[in-house]
Image 1 (cartoon, one colour):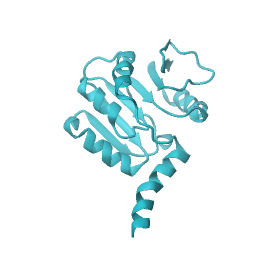
Image 2 (cartoon, rainbow, N blue to C red):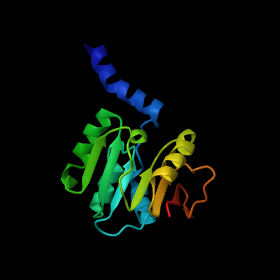
Image 3 (tube, helix red, strand yellow):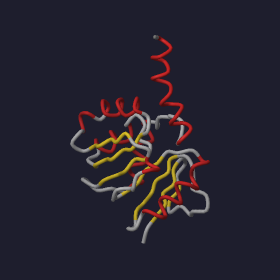
Image 4 (cartoon, rainbow, N blue to C red):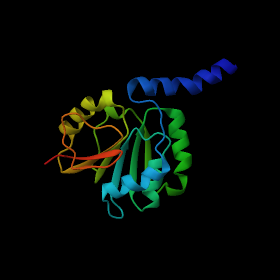
Length: 161
């Protein structure tokens, strides 16, 4: 029984690491800096691709922004729904592989992926984003793209017309 419980908990983390990125939470002190980089106004929507435990979406909601998260790991979806419960009118979290969805309209898109997936992300963003939209990447740069703004640990790009 213990082995089954361990598998049920650990398997989603392994699948997430293979399909996307391993679970690594954003540092709390970086959330505020990333939201400042987003340059959102109250009520605007930020989409978090691979929203993990919901920390970034909670920080966005605390600042008055709407958030839509996509996470493939069901354990992290449950955790993120608990973490963002207080802000449930502003935050929506989907149990979904963001590679398989069409991106919704957003004022900003945020992502914390690993470097090997950045070319695939670039292709998805270039294909799907029609309106001028900032994309913020935490830690990893998108190869072949010139960032509008670069900070010590983030890059802001512009996609769309």
